[in-house]
Image (cartoon, rainbow, N blue to C red; front, side, top):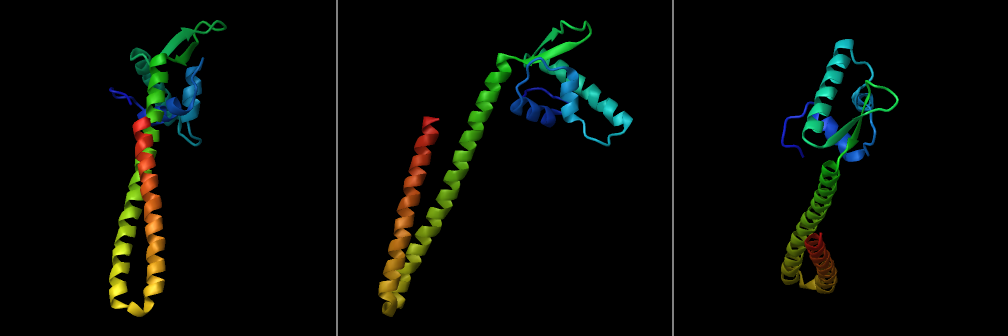
Length: 162
């Protein structure tokens, strides 16, 4: 998502993607990052990395900073339009990824069904006494195959639409 090195990058990505950041204090960020049981030096390091990350995000235009009206030394962070746009495209990419995964699953099922239909045709030749049952089974497989092909086509069209 970012083209620069960000301390606590994965943690910040999660916060930025899932939270609406409006007038957050720095402590709001590190309180989300802090886990119980951290030693003093670990908490100090976490806070330092948080402030460094906030500085970098502000410097690269992802966060806006303003002084709080109620306290001179307090700064409030809010997301910028740049961050909002990245969130939108990130969600769009995730949606496409989900659809591609579904398409791949269906393609595997289609391949498997085609193999089963082919094997059923071989069974018809080798087991003529079970012809009716094998034909019914093969028809069922062909119906499933057509259904999955339609679903795959629908997903491909949806991917083009997105």
